[in-house]
Amino acid sequence: MSDRLGFPVFDADNHLYETRDAMTRYLPDEHRGAIDYVDVHGRTKIVVRGHITDYIPNPTFDRVGRPGAQEEYFKVGNPDGKSTREIIGRGIDCPDAYRHAEPRLQLLDEQGIDYALIIPTLASLVEERMRDDPDLCASVIHSLNRWMTDEWPFTFEGRLFSTPVITPGVVDKAIAELEYVLAHGARIILMRPAPAWGYQGPRSFGLPEFDPFWARVQEAGIVTLIHASDTGYTRHWNEWQGAKDEMQAFGEASPFMHAMAQTHRDIQDAVASLICHGTVERFPGLKFALVENGGGWVPGMLSWLDHTWRDMPHNFHEKPSDTFKRNFWQHPFHEEDPRGLIELLGADNVIFGSDYPHVEGMADPLSYRDELVGIPEEDVRKVMGANMMKLMGVAA
Image 1 (cartoon, rainbow, N blue to C red):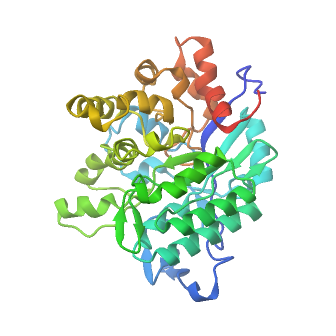
Image 2: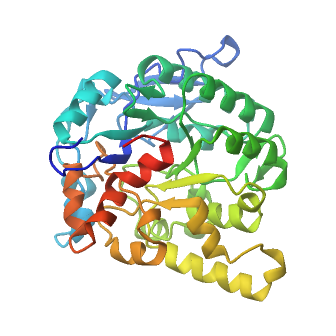
Image 3: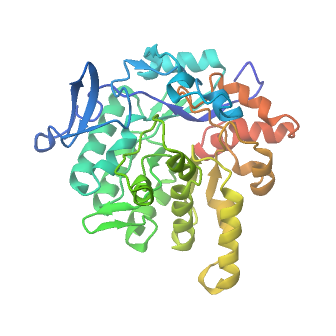
């Protein structure tokens, strides 16, 4: 139990930094060369299918940003007009605790954290850059998940729960990957809030054709983590800006791109699809944790979903806001006031995550307790740990 807070803490948003062979160690020969690294003017860059990508500025993670370097920026803004480089500052050598499970567990002890989800970082570039080749995409994802079984076991010492990736484009392959990770101890799976790209192009993973997959997820009782990623929405924004940019996870966007990112259209569309296309009606036992997508969009989305229900109640089995409260658990950004979200959804549906050790996260994860001042202590316990413990089936 955490000595600092006096009750168990479960951080729903911790990240690992992949090694160079994370996506290639188990890649079959026919797909060798799909992922590579090259030197560009003295800097190592990752190459995906022959194209150099700047999605991650340092994809080897030999040097990484200081945890929480942007924490103040996200809380108070940028009144001095500093550049992203000035805000982030100098990097640090990547600690072993960001690379491997055992030292990470020791770090959690130092931080006063009892349990944590461990989420990949570089993996979020894969699906968008392989969307037109679902077989290759599934192969790279499987290679990554096999690497995780070596370096970040899906359940480690009953305290670390790493999140294998499922790419849903080809249903049979998605089910096979789900069976693989379940057989290796997974308690949670990771998906991006984006259309599934199969052999016939994009479509929502909430459509009935994906029901065999969701039926197995429900049967297994496993949690689905929907985490911010490269969802492909930059392609849509490029049309408005007349550009051909790719998403850059830590880059400095144009004012238009920055503004559009604040709308969180991708996660809203994903949730709306799961509700409006009836996925959570057909499978009411599904459990979705929405992590690092913010929470400011939730009141507006539930309002217009309920408005749709009032217009056509015959197309819903219940009011969408009630569906949301049953099937979804929401993680607000650390810079957002969580009180309104707790009031809207109830304390049982809000979860804590620090985004450690990313630069936009928290340097001291447990300092989030300060954001909950004035909230009943029992509700603080739920948000800081008990809700995720219940979701993940962790005994108190």
